Image (cartoon, rainbow, N blue to C red; front, top):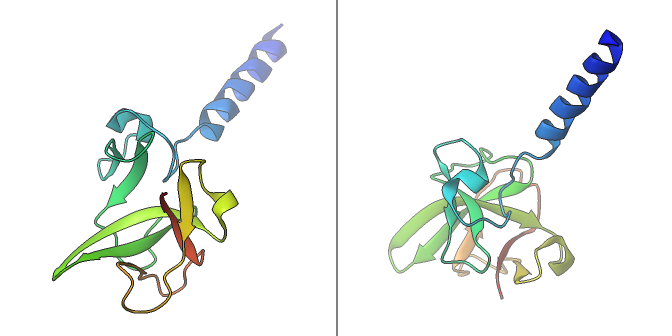
Length: 121
């Protein structure tokens, strides 16, 4: 009987680890995005969007890339969900692939995991 209880505990622990929120997941509040204080829920995006604030090159989780969002002279740095095509993104999002240095979103990783990032349509 003790053996069955140990198996149940292992299955439970594996299910918790497998459900860890990722950058780009939908959310309605910061706790939906995990417990890291620099990963928040951007509720201004469709369905909410878990983002990591203040990244630097090659510092984002595996599912994301660090980008500079450029507006005039201002630059903000975020980890956004990486993608290679639209199908890699949630339904309300497209895969934005920066074309050149004038794009408003630039991937700044030295070794990007992806060629683009998921942004709202």
